[in-house]
Picture 1 (tube, rainbow, N blue to C red):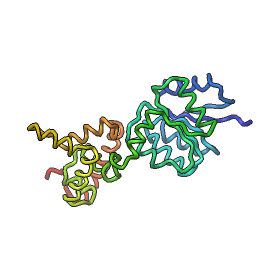
Picture 2: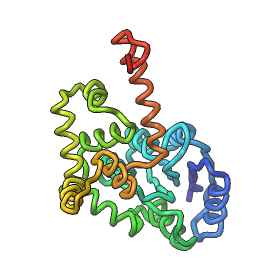
Picture 3: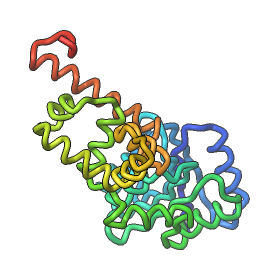
Picture 4: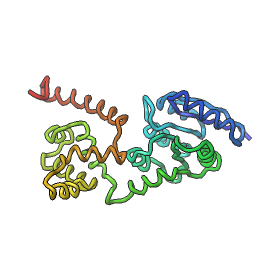
Length: 255
């Protein structure tokens, strides 16, 4: 039987050491372990393997776990990946469900689990070729897949824009929309997050919410956005602003 090669994509040395010790203390067959300190290195290493077996963190420098998996599965859909993360954010679960190829075996285990459960998840996916999804993540998957609570792509886009502090005018410019189109997207987003219903209840007692701020607060609570991913979105926004200023020949958006 050939020796298995397991790639661990993990930027935190302590977390890598934990996984390494866990695997060596398990009942798995002979295997070797390689470490990739970021998503970009993980992709380069995994693409060289005939059938990659990977344990991957979600939040990594260079390339996050979701983007790494998408790039790998685009070329090697047979690759088996166990995502292990301290996060069960809806934004990650939502993104993952959109990229998993049909009949692909994968897993998602939270780092807060016991050693035994983490080992069971890794064995189930990498050796037994069966999917293993953390029960807490399954709850999020249920909400993400429900039409009345799941955000569409354009609603999620609107959420990112208001989270970055964009005005209606800037959103219209960035997304090639009319102001009415922007308002339509925002109203749809508020409806999905039940902001309109909350606003109605608050106004009955003589007060109300700022719907933009409330939407961001609800989204943070649900895990639809988080600071790590917003940092990436901020970088994308800055790139767009540079091009926007060049097109309009302005030095400052306030002019």
